[in-house]
Length: 268
Image (tube, rainbow, N blue to C red; front, side):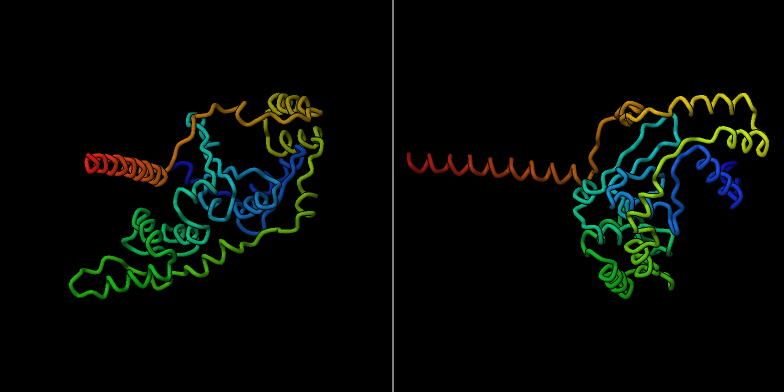
């Protein structure tokens, strides 16, 4: 609750951007959603994935989503978009519709439909238009009590368009120019942090020393050197598919053995 009471002001955002630039770190200001711009970097091949707690990163098309950087106790979770779509047995358009059905920032959701029901409906019907037809048929049945409430402002088409064509910078040369690292400015950093923002000078000096010691080190360390792998897990959907294939294979083998046995008896 204390965290929710903090309001991020435009001044705070400008201070954060100024600090990052003074440290020599490249910065891209997204014209729209930050996750959408990160997804665009992934599509351009300029980034491996998006580090965010927002699952919309996947809906915008990030090839990988890494969650948990804000926690010191929990392991980092990496979600592979391609593997997830295979596990869900969905294409990208169907996955976007699923996300809208589950609830997104751009519109209201259908009352009475949660994530599990939404997943089932999209798997069966493949898009929201057909889902809405089925829901209306169910609601019109006089023998059944109306289960689902479709809001008047269910803007699923507009939401779909925002996920597919978000407001992002698509000019690759422009992005590449923005992604260039530079050397930190120690004097400007001290002036900004100590004089303007009242940070302790000894802590700022210590931080600057660490930052300057990193200069000239061109070899980038692998992510797994910082975080221990917790192993990979499959979605329940993928597990069920694998089990289903195993059961089918086992059943087929059993039928072959049975047929062979019956054939042997017939020959006797």
